[in-house]
View (cartoon, rainbow, N blue to C red):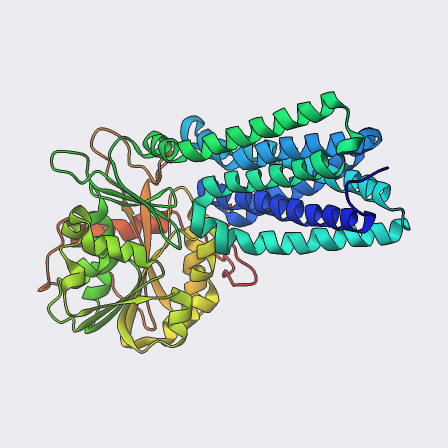
Length: 517
């Protein structure tokens, strides 16, 4: 066939298109994995679902592409237009499904399959086109195509976390990727293979690509309004702060005078609720502080400053080190009037030192502390699993000063007793003596307590107090008096925990985590 350029340059343009399309395809995959992990949780499961469905669908797409090989140029142009639209809008559709339908997994599987089919159809069509430009042995053509494909995947994989997410965010980043995909595919077909198209096919592709680009541009313009509407659908109408830090999305709702109590959400999960946080933080902090010396205290997590607030109520405290991986949460705890009032200005106290670090890494080089508090996300969340492992508690035990104690929030004992007692078994496996206790979550005014925007909340908080020697669960007789705890209440909490005990559970390790449902 006749080309507008020399065959060698035409072949080069096809390989460049393969490179661009492969980069876009991998961005779509990573976008689905990242957003599904944020919306659904358990990143291992979500990554497995997306990748396995997409790889299977790519095989289906390769088979279906055989029916398009006779009109490979038109077929490739149509595939790229549809792929650009579906891939570009996939993140927005997934978020909308979660916000307004309360369920995103069917949309996740559907988009993974559809995008995989279209990606799978690309290489057979491009193989046909490159052979039409200049004949070469099939092995050499396949090697060239896959080399460009793999290099493009590398660039797309690196561009997603280091360029697209920081510059555009998840929704706009997917839309920009779709636009690049549409331009690359359309330009190749409409210019290099324009003599291979009938006038009708040419205009059909021009109109289709223009429409796709217009829809993607409209999506980019409407993204801020869409995000606001979706957040209101998820969190309610009183969203005051919604920021994406370098670590996670942070949302604050309520906290105004005569309004709803303040709530803090991290990646869509409720971490602090103003109506019940006092009961949680008093139950986490006061038994550990009452059981021995507490001059030096280490708080792992707790960037909201609420655990530090309770620690600072003890006059004998000389230093409090808060290790928080997200400086954005600490910044809000310092500056937001409602959250700062709730933590009683804990970060203004000169005894408090904030360290931005991963809790696991920090324990490797930490000094000795009288009290170590683990105010960390649930153990069933994949990124948090290592913070409930045998290796982690081995490091925590090593930094305990003589007579030191370790206080851990270990998830929900009632709904998920196996995970809770696995934390207990893991702590015991490093030589710690533990005392379990479970505190009931008080009902929210006007409705049930929630653990995230879906409304399916925990019915209790499970805690563990640990030390090298046997430790007693109680409150300091002459220390600050908790407003929600009594000695009798703690004794009842200990008995409540024992009623759900699951014996002889193996510990969780980095190589064999045991907290998945």
